[in-house]
Image (cartoon, rainbow, N blue to C red; front, side, top):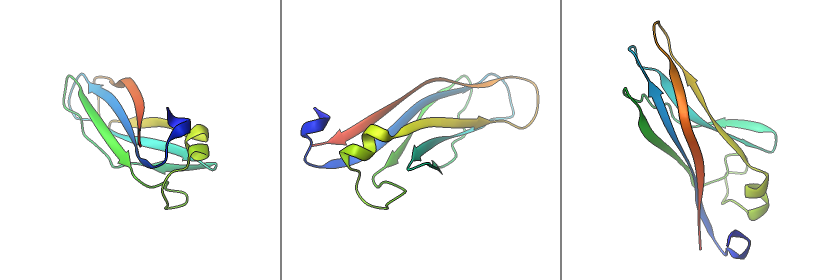
Length: 101
C-alpha cells in the first residue's frame, strides 16, 4: 500500500478523450498542488476517442520527487477545448496511477 512506500517514482494521469467530428480538439492533464495549477502537454486525440497519458516524475511545485503527503493532497483533471463547429469533444474517463516501491 501507498503508506508503506519507500520511493515514489511518478504519477500518471490517464484519460479517454473523444471528438465526434473534425476539427480535432486538444486535451491536457491538470494537476493542482499547493494551490497552484500545472498543465501537461497538449494531445490531439483522433475520433472516435483515444487514451492518453501524462507522466509527472517530479512534483511541479517543488521540482522534487513526490512525497506521500503531497499525493494525499493532490487534485487532478483535464482541460479540453476545440475550435470550430460542429460536434462535441469530451472526456469519458480519467484516472491516476501512482508508481511506487
